[in-house]
Image (tube, rainbow, N blue to C red; front, side):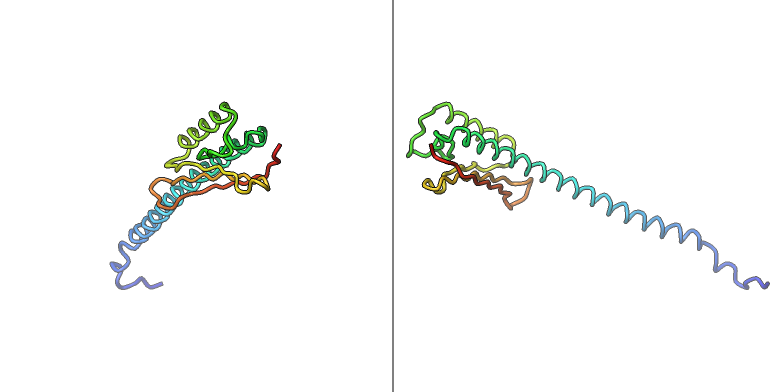
Length: 147
């Protein structure tokens, strides 16, 4: 076999391969880091949605077990029909404070009787995630039977 007449053209080829493979590895690691950051963001938003669902469920459960005082569970508090139970009103105000503390940048939650004759109650929670300008909203409706 004949040797190539210009062996210096082959020098450094392995080094070039190594640099290219390191560059590809660096870009892959950068993409992996960005992907993990996005996963963390999605996980945090999911945790907030779960928290909002649990809080909304808590108020609906309280209203459904004490539907004789359904007016006490509205936010903002309504003047008519008046709330007859100060304990139920205090529980609702404490629930509102928990919502404001647990959801980041939360706006005041609303709980209202949509159709008094049909007995429909709606709870709406809104909050902002970190520096986002788009509000996250969780709304739950339930029907109740007036006593």
